[in-house]
Length: 538
Image: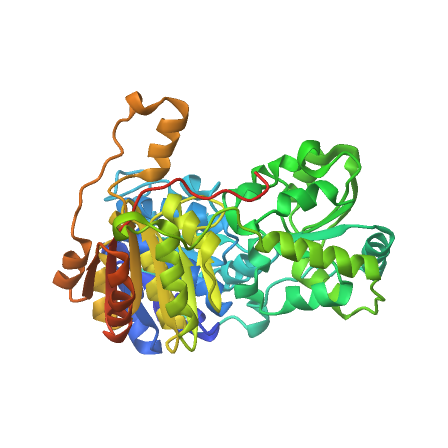
């Protein structure tokens, strides 16, 4: 058995059925080994797309998403979304081919100190130099990716280690794959419950790993038991996230913030007093020491308690404990829920000459989401992406996450269809975003993974355009215009379905045809460019 066989058989024992990859010289032994254990390789057109697919897969399935890329240039192509995986708290095992150990330092083909490059982008990064340890190292990497705050783990795989014949055929025992859990003590659980009961306007905030798509009903259960507002935050716009409505007003009224795994960082305005009020106390539950230390730095004396525990474990403990919610807490929870629903923009209204605004486009898309028996909604970043995030809802939702990266939504859509084959996948993006990974339409056609990609096309990099208008003025616009490219025809050329829409009255018909096509569909919609909406509290 080769080192490559040991690694792949370990993945199979862990229950991995699919890996996301783009082929290359140094990982061909891994491809060969996949045949014998029936692991499916989802082969992409760009390494970054493979990482994005693993991110989406991990969020929808709860599994560790596994990526295989080749060395040096292939490895380097993956770094942007690897940063996004960490920011979005997604468990990903990132496997990269590497130059042989036997040629280390001699100038081997595509030799690069890959571990030093990814150390700041991952939970851990290491290079295998012993073929016999590939099984235990793989098990450990899978466990680490899912332990505590989830995130990517990088294993660099020298080619000669994958090719080395080894005597052992033993695979790691199943207990080596299980994530390590940090459970809160009964004392900490009681302390948090007492703090909530003693406060008048408590509010629970969670990080990306705790959202409803990844954890089902746990947050609703927690909200129901405690009768306090529970808000999951994962947008790069933080307190200015338009999908939060008028939540900023409530944050200024809260007297207790309980953070379950939500990093006290720029997305929370660093916990600044002007956003939360001087008399608001904080309790932070986090498995990561650096996150707890950051909370101390940003909150100072307002931080009353920190708990070293898994936020999800704490949420489960809190949601099963016996609590008698107060009437005041219930009223407060209802008030916050109403604030979050509040929008300071209209989604419907008269439009001259049948032009299509971002809000009108989203309103039409929502009608088709609502008529689908099951849906997955994917919203990319940028100005139009913010309209989609603020206006739309589906059974499950994936967004670009705290990194603020754009361009992953087509890849997300492919992974979503693989994870949810019975669902209709709606993915929305701007005409700037679509250019990053348009070639993945070919991947989707090849894999027979239909989705509906809706492009809000204003012929502009509108996020940057709005910055220029605001900061430099209309006479200082440069470098943000795009053309009226027919992305719909390009999708057709790759084997998909295309629709081109210039009038609002034609939009519903185009969406209906796209859904009915059973193909990866591109609905290219000319819209009137507009700044992203802002939260009602800003």
